[in-house]
Image 1 (tube, rainbow, N blue to C red):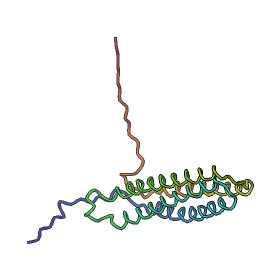
Image 2 (cartoon, rainbow, N blue to C red):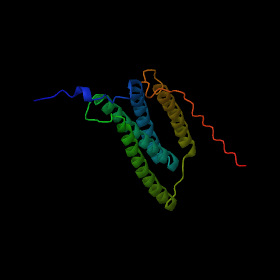
Image 3 (cartoon, rainbow, N blue to C red):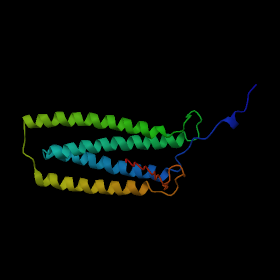
Image 4 (cartoon, rainbow, N blue to C red):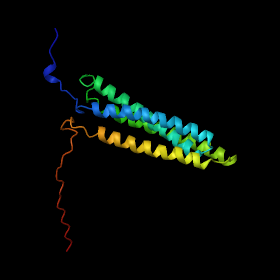
Length: 176
């Protein structure tokens, strides 16, 4: 005998419509990948540890955006899946944790590379490296703008919408 348990289940899809954020993340992902490759190649050819480090740092951003895009896709795909007893909101949190681990690993690689360059320095082509660095700054600003715009869609549910509430607590500590 099969029983209908639908009266005892609850939908835990709290995140609302994230399609703007997902699309913005994917767009930034591609621009970040392009700039990462440009900085790593330029850092190698111009002997610039700063460009090389920023290129690998962009690689960590790329990994984070890939993880975020995957998290958005998983959240969308499993939005109404009752196997996720507390909803899919924990997916981006786990993605953030993985991103932090990747960032730590890249930091270790950059420390090793920096120590090797201290032992065997080579001349840096500053003018060329500066042009690439400025382009990288512009790309970062464009990406920040895109992500900011994507994060402010108006299709959010009340659970994640901005709301004001007062936390005014009167703590009178009269010590006579």
